[in-house]
Length: 151
Image 1 (cartoon, rainbow, N blue to C red):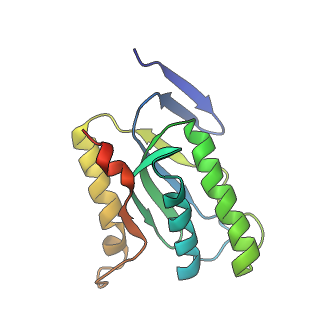
Image 2: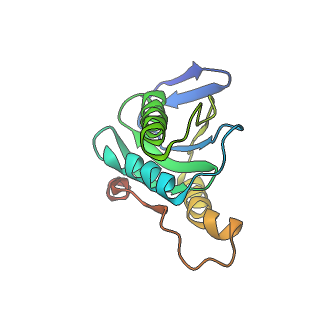
Image 3: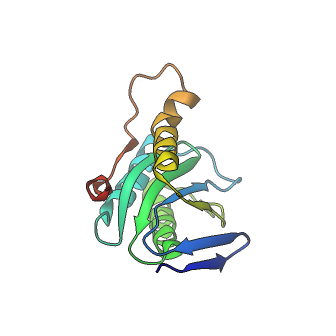
């Protein structure tokens, strides 16, 4: 039996072992949009521990926020912290960005069923085309290795 628990920061966050989460975090309001180089850094950070610390299903790195569908293998808040901390450090060292990069809080939701999983997946994959309807390609959206574990 899986136990539902609550983790609290400013917002409550429900936790359920083995669950898939829809997660969103945003740039701090003091920051300008992510450059293409920075979006690549975030994408690479998301993919780095895929399959070991978490199963990444799908992701998109937009100019001011990130969406993922992820099944963590350890505490979700630690996974998110590692992504945000690593990318902040990389931005400070390589792109000259200064100060707090990401908002302190993030949004997460337990995906409750296959229909919701499909809806969130479509939302993530379509996010760039919704924001910029004329684009033909967007290199910061994709599937992780976690898609092999769906079933």
